[in-house]
Image 1 (spheres, rainbow, N blue to C red):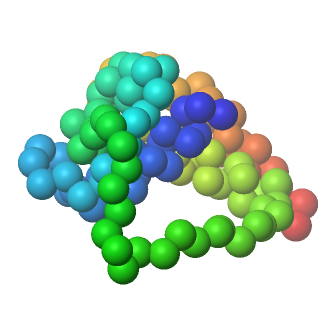
Image 2 (tube, rainbow, N blue to C red):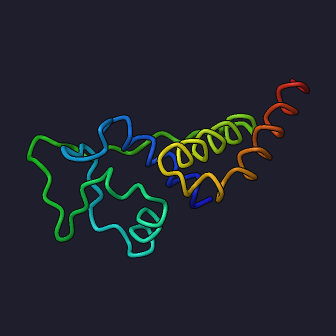
Length: 116
């Protein structure tokens, strides 16, 4: 589950920072050490600006509560597959880590689509 979340996050980081070097658009504020270590280990920490300290929001920003969703098994499988593919594309070391998971998810998705 961690790799799916981090893969989605990395995909967002890659979208907003296509060069992957400077000018990071996505800021991670006070990430836990575990999350920071996982991002570093997966080779995608450079996609983010990491800040530590009290959060200071602009005056014109309002807090929003996200709407709850009930994704289908197919949507969850597709998102998980895309997240793992993103991590493999982001760093060559991740291919060995996630190729079996990606293959399993692709086969599962194919089976789900057949039975729909």
